[in-house]
Image (tube, rainbow, N blue to C red; front, side, top):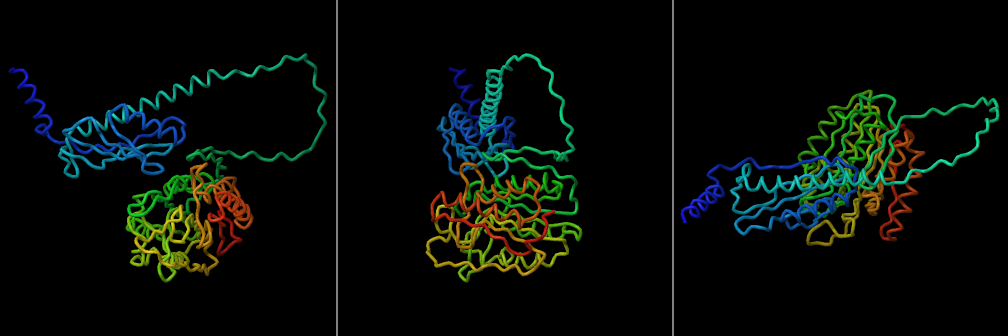
Length: 422
């Protein structure tokens, strides 16, 4: 009887926190095996099921999991993932003494066990890939009788130089980036990709496309990584966007170029002015943010003392999401976006579509459609937009029409069309 009472006291003391709460554990882990996003998703679902978590997919790259084996407490987490990393973030809890910074050690223990379980499954995948490679039959070279080769004719040919290339995979898209011959240390870039919004529908694969575009700038354009500002999802809040637009303006140099890339929602106001939509704002409140109005952004960038400004917009400004639903809540306004005029030779804008059209996702490649074809052309080292643009336009139009006539998308090129990219 005494042993039972003592055991109950120990359990009660440890759970009520007399040992003291611990700092909240936030997990971010690299994925050390080449896998697709679907394989990452399957690994996470299997691991959560074995560890007593009830999981469900709530977005293109997001899973919510709730611990379901205890009636005394509850823990709920968000698991965000792509092909390179996954992270486990706190969402909610009950009876675990969370005060905003610290939490009962039971939560950290649950999350740690889940992390280890996921990593074990990734290690199994590595071993499985190694076994599959060993099982592949080796091609046998047929034996032939040796005969001396005939003398080769003397040909004075010009041998094309071979350029170094780097292969990268983002989602289901594989790119081969031609490596830059020199670093463009005086050029800078701001790259923004918002897939998950706080108050608005998702923009599938916008963050994945932004990562791929940042890699293009680094490898093929030769811009050092420290010169590239990358804002993804919740990091692209209204405050962060405005602050980093100011930072990039200050960094701009006379002898370098400036590159802006945006993938996310674009919205028209009731008077037709167009805005880029940050992570934390609703479409109907954008008139309060004149600094994020496209016309104002272009006007400020045109005054900078730089060689050229290149803007790549993978966004539509129809006020609708990828499925045709209005971003404005509770109303059905008649919205018509004005064409934003680019009136300087210093700025070149490549837009995913006309203001009245969709900017589609490319589900097979797990990329935004416009960005996929844009990177595919630019990664080869081509620098003249007026030569590249017709190919991008044709491929995007053809792929969008395969989704249906209502998804028609035709990229646009504005401003200085003859200038070289770098």
